[in-house]
Image (cartoon, rainbow over all chains, first blue to last red):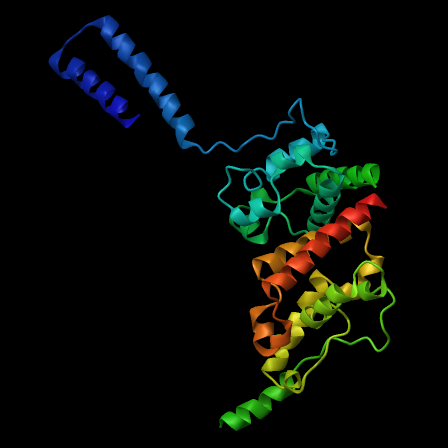
Length: 155
Length: 145
């Protein structure tokens, strides 16, 4: 990426400094410049993984769009395979829950429910650093309702 | 000078978490969910912190040791209390069994600071396996019922 940047920049300089006024060449390099900029920005931003229910999910937990929305907003920075937070991954990886049997579903939902009831998630340190990472009241209510209804269906 | 400090500290001992005078009715050991062997292991290695039947040795009444002891018991009971076992919903029992298996296998439980003093609470590999197997067997059994 950086080498290509360098190449495009030097080509531009050549054109400007040495007056090589090949318009097609100029347009091509401008287009390349534009594309590279977009690519670099996309690359630099660590995109948060998006939880999407796979078509062939074998698990017993049923996800509502509302629950998925909250999970994607507030949980996917840590509870996903690409996260660097090992403790979070040990506790829960959302993608794994798609194939949970009844036993795993029950104990996981119980864990999530306790975390929500005690206000333990997202962790205090995370919220202190990034206040917008906290669950809003509406989100907490939605998620808790989904967990409780999922448990009722399983129990 | 140090003696004065130590005596002074005793006034800040705090309150010892209460101990059950009657055997708790919801206690795990009162159920048929654990055999005598595993029950004995749990009683020796876990019950001081993870039940209402904590035993307080003489030094646990003396500061600064009492601080550690009381804190361990408070937090231990909060995390897992075998005295309340039967009152827990199935999903919580399943979760606790999984956690118990994980913690003893990792060696994070019982606490090193506890087994340093209570050497009989130290779990060897065979005992860890016994407990781990028990957690898995019981959780499977609970799912069947």
